[in-house]
Every structure is written in structure tokens, then in C-alpha cells.
Length: 65
Image (tube, rainbow, N blue to C red):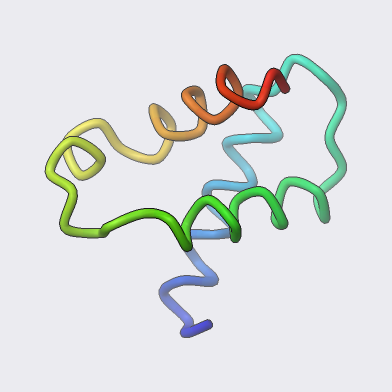
């Protein structure tokens, strides 16, 4: 992973920790974020427009966190 990807992973993990309805530890949040980012196109206009917090909230809903 390059530095920018680590930064995005950490930001997404932080958002997951903030928005999750169940307790998550930092390592689990980072693992989920890392996996989710492997499936994301950074050229996706919807994601670019909505942002990481929106993406984190969608992950929380879809994964029932």
C-alpha cells in the first residue's frame, strides 16, 4: 500500500469507528477499511462527491456494524 492509501484507510477506519452501532476495535476497522478500499474506484464520481463519511455510513449499513 502506498502512503495515500494508508491515509485513506486510516480516515475510513476512523469514520467506521465513529459511525458503527456496535463496538469495533481499531484493527478490525482498519481491516474492513483496507478491504473496502480494494474494491473502490477512485475515479468514481459518486464517491468523490459524497466523501468518506458517506462511504463509511454505507459500509456500516451493509455490514450491519
